Length: 178
Image (tube, rainbow, N blue to C red):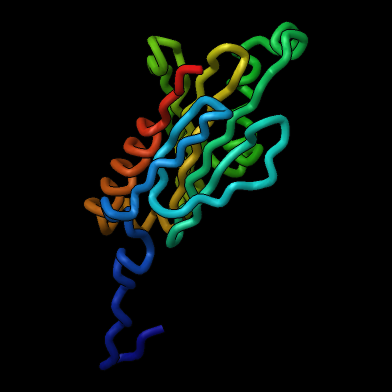
């Protein structure tokens, strides 16, 4: 509470909350044995690999970017149609109802294959997900930022920089020829 004669403390700078990576920080990681390459904004954390390749992630100031590759068997594909898998992605990334879906569109990705782009927010956290199937493999990219309500209301340029970084990250995934 501010008393008469006092001024309210200044709002924090957006750079304290989120900064996109500098061009010099963007590094491509190539995983020949898994058949893909992807560019993160810094050094990635590679978790224990299971069945070849599971995923990668990087945490930056108030933001997380992650990539997951999930191989499905013929049996899994028969039991779970693509629409069901995309529906489950919406549940999981919507934090089972805690985050509201604010964007959903189908997009051409990887040689014209239809993928899905999703956006979620609870006001504070905003996340974007892109996923596509190719050859019984689900490729899923995720990026989020905290303090979205502050950025989107008071720092439109920083919010746009986050959206631009999300697009750059999503478009950096390359499938390699085997």
